[in-house]
Image 1: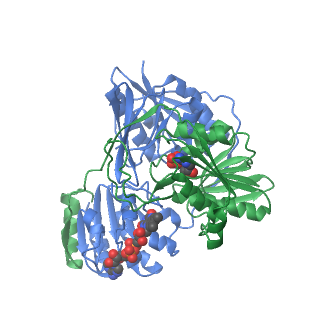
Image 2 (image 1 turned 180 degrees about the vertical axis):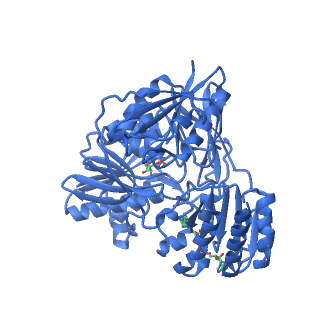
Image 3 (image 1 turned 45 degrees about the vertical axis):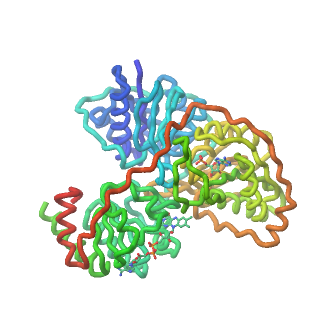
Length: 325
Length: 249
Ligand SMILES: Cc1cc2nc3c(=O)[nH]c(=O)nc-3n(C[C@H](O)[C@H](O)[C@H](O)COP(=O)(O)OP(=O)(O)OC[C@H]3O[C@@H](n4cnc5c(N)ncnc54)[C@H](O)[C@@H]3O)c2cc1C
Ligand SMILES: Nc1ncnc2c1ncn2[C@@H]1O[C@H](COP(=O)(O)O)[C@@H](O)[C@H]1O
């Protein structure tokens, strides 16, 4: 029987949201492969794990769990050894293109002696192999590749595949951990100074640029993000380089690639390198006083005018709508 | 301190992409090529590490055609001691590229091998960790902060919502993120000196692998958006569109 292994992630013992996307993507690929292809989920974590029972309904026929004290934080060599061993029984391995998945997928591939396709935005079946579409050249082109290795290893871009509900319980079993040498140790996870929702994970991103004039005015952006309830704050490189925001907030070619349901660019001109990081967002809104700013070419909706007048008004309007809901 | 850097020649990031006649690669006509931006941070780190150690050697490797010699010279002008061109066609299959580097670096006696976190052309983000696996040495990816003491490495990498602090011993492979340092510009003296530095050319054969490009296309154009209005008075119209048309509110 053909099977896919979806590699899930946990943080502090809780299954991450992106892992539900990975499961749904694996499930859709299993359907495309046909022949009753099944989906197993692998979870590697510490002694306590929450959310495992929800993984069946989220798409897993079987959940394989490896719980160990030294797996609570990411353990590059231990995770890679375990998944390279387990991977032998699967036709496809699907991971998330997160900080962990991007580090882990190539390690598993190298240990198994096969190729891997990273940051994939669509998957399918082509000529006996697995096809994958991935943005290259900073999103300026789409590359379609076919993987003929066994297994085919892919990492999918967050916020690209919608999590689903498959309404059936999965079974739970142990995932065997082979002997391994931990060459790298993750000591701890430090919280960033500006602790907040990460731009790559949020379904709404509100970003500010040099149009805000000075760092203190980012309060306007934070307030708007807050009004949406679940939005992250992003920034252009100009303001990150100026030290107004942390590097982790930078959207664009040398920053992060985001694909939220809604991206709001405030006082950002829309340089090609910024667009590289956000052009695949589902809905884009731009607020800029220059009607010829390039950001308006990619924006679904734009308002031309002074952000200092527009943003507070928008924040109030969003608050009002959400209060009524 | 002996440090190797893998440096890729890539199209300048502002390049307008035109699809080539094979439908699988870009048309390189009129394209300006530059050193991969993340690799420049790796080059700077290698030079600074040797300077701090007061002794050692820095070597730059590039896999590509003859034109990559120019890219290697840029690294030599920055201060890298010598270069090696692995002359051959690269591959979209990062594992085949990693095999080529691993075979070359094995037994080279390097304390550190540095890669960029990703190549801005193929966005693979995999050659570094794959090479490390093949060499059997520790690897930390997307390093934005680095401390070395007595053969021990402590590195910080950014993850979603936090910073992961990692440790390992040398020899090791690191892939470098923006923010680790500020790459120096080649000085005139450096450019002159680079002309005399050794640049070895060694033909290599990169295998076929298990990943094949079937097509390269331009992404669908975003439909032309609309200006909802001017100034704060346009806010109600925008909010209403976000609710009823875009359904994101
Ligand atoms: C190799 C390379 C990599 C790069 N990577 C990135 C990257 O990852 N991310 C990135 O963002 N950039 C990147 N850049 C930089 C990029 O080219 C631009 O310089 C940068 O995006 C500009 O930032 P900005 O839009 O905030 O500033 P500006 O271009 O200065 O734009 C400010 C905008 O604010 C508007 N404005 C001013 N006042 C107001 C007001 N009161 N109300 C409304 N609007 C107002 C202006 O009309 C203008 O459009 C990169 C550049 C290079 C060369
Ligand atoms: N052809 C190449 N020549 C030299 N270095 C390369 C080559 N391909 C990849 N690399 C190195 O591997 C890193 C990651 O590349 P990639 O996995 O393709 O995103 C780059 O930043 C380079 O350091």
